[in-house]
Image (cartoon, rainbow, N blue to C red; front, side, top):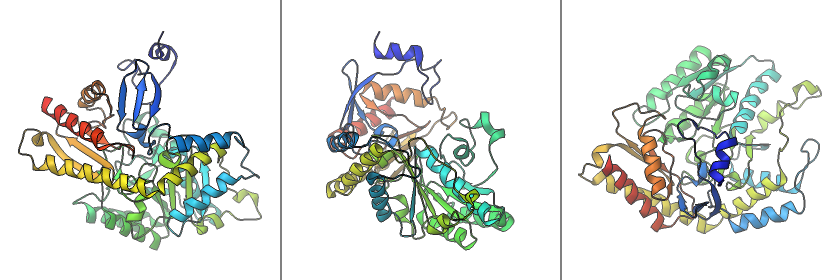
Length: 430
């Protein structure tokens, strides 16, 4: 049996309806922008494999650093012990974070990074003896699949079976174009009604990923952070997707004039090499857990907290992020996306008539298609698009009726042009 056949017998894949999609493509190698299947077919990974492999696959520099760390220290308990890769990574991240960020807490992935931030905000008020248990979040946001992360994510198909187990959240509109004032008004309304009970406000800064790469306004979001600070409500920026250059700056919060109290990272943190999450916070948050009474301890941890090998991968990725060449590539991709966007918008053709909106920020490009059916994650156009692009040797996974690109920074202009041309071809076939 080949890899696909062996997999089919025993593995349960994420976000997969195995009755409808029983076969998974067997990938045996990755290099740069490409992954290769067991039959030798090459695919352009236009999604950076769920937005993680920002420098491309099997990067030799990261591999070298990981290999060196494996020979020195593969893992050690992180309660009562520490090690050089974790300390150095924390030091370097804090230099990139807003100046108010002072402490780093390590976890395993994006969802757990969010869980940590939520638990920090809840327990901060618990330690202070103030009952603040409510959270404000944006409609259409996605923060992960663990229970706390689900609770603050948009309530839909992903969380419906668990609805009765999720804590109450105050959902407001994100400040998308044309709704900036309305979003701010909604925030003020929730605070005026329940402000004394609200512990935190969590958001995906500037780009709501799973919702379809929906872009919102930096000025309005900054104002909302400012309002929360004035009302003693912690702000949590979920930078799991937007961090490490995706929006054209190191972090999406670099676009904001007002900075959050906590930040969550994962995905590009290790360059897609290993699983790791990070939650940062201010000294104010950390100090609320300092006590002679152990009951005020933050009782949260993971078996592989601050894994030295994952830290080494992150440090290598940071080295690459600090190279001028990486930022030239990020700007080049953003400019290419923008030229394609302007080209499509200026066309007086049937292709333009099939597009609801094109959105672009940094290296993110999203094309929302006009459809007669539902525009959710389950829109049938998604399956047509997946097959079409796989046949073309392009790895894309549309979000319902939204086709989007978040390529690795090493992608060539030639490959981008091939993807753009393939998108136009697909639209002409609709």
